[in-house]
Length: 188
Length: 265
Image 1 (cartoon, each protein chain N blue to C red):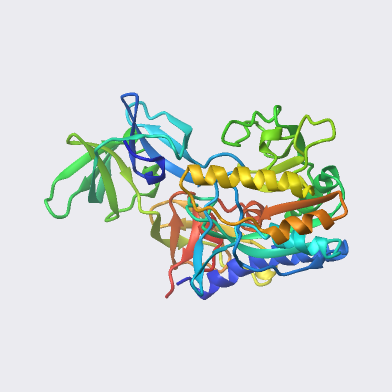
Image 2 (cartoon, one colour):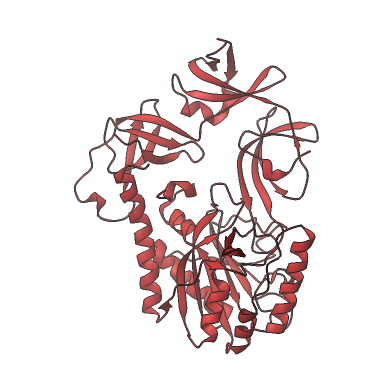
């Protein structure tokens, strides 16, 4: 038993025998009423996603899972393979297991694999991942004058995101994996 | 450290919004004021955790809202005031919360209906989007016990809160609801507006109750701000007041999903 205040992204909760991984959380102190943690949980068996609010005062069961640092190697068909660089142990997971994470993977990416009783359950991405911009239109002079002008950029793993106009082809940028949006350019 | 271009970019988002806020209130005859960040009596709400600091050996805290100071200024005779200030709340995290964030608060004579209209005009002006904001009652918005509305609307007001959730708001004349509303946009709570409670006796009763609740859950019990209670009695009512999260307004305007992606540091 533990407090919802200890919830982190990647925590696995046991709710009435079912395992749910926390994919998003937010601690909230409303203007009135007791504080709580708003979570988005993914069922590790069915893949179903639900939102649940947990009162800070209530107790939750954290499932004992292991977090292993691994590196993404390659995908083949519907399967994605990762390797533990220390032991050379490899695990493969299906597209269904890893969900939206697939879009962010690129060769050599360091990720955290959530293991439970010897089985790889899912992949937890770093909060920000660095990619190289392989294509974007050059900025047109005058575009920067007002507000938030953005344009499309294609990244080295095939992702396309909106970026500010000052981003050029060849720039390295960080993508926020929680929102899927541009975060910042890596200083040269 | 962010690159120069990113700093510049994020600054321009903030600057656009802050300039618009100033333009909006200056045009309406509001006076811009500054209020202290360091106080002996921060917000008393049992769910808030003010950041505590020691000043010359005495317990102080960083404000969770500039509300008490703003109302003291109203009591001194100022009529229409606004401030944009950092505020601090411990234990806040996630995509829409940080322990330090920026609050816009404004106070003026009028009803909470006046305030709701003014807030809608401010939001339309800053967002540069004239589409109307719908207005739902607490029941219509299906607000759950966590304060979260459940509706398909994207941008809307929730009004007529139950009396038990009055906080620092006045109770309606017929005693059926609290004169309080909130605005929500893209799943974020944006602001909390009240027709302000100006009865120092009722306010003291609510403070004492909050102190007792804090004691019971083992949180620091801060002293009641007596100067604030005295000031309340001097304000000629009714007045309204609104507290709006500026970070979230910037996020809403520029469709940024994570509050960390608009910060400079």
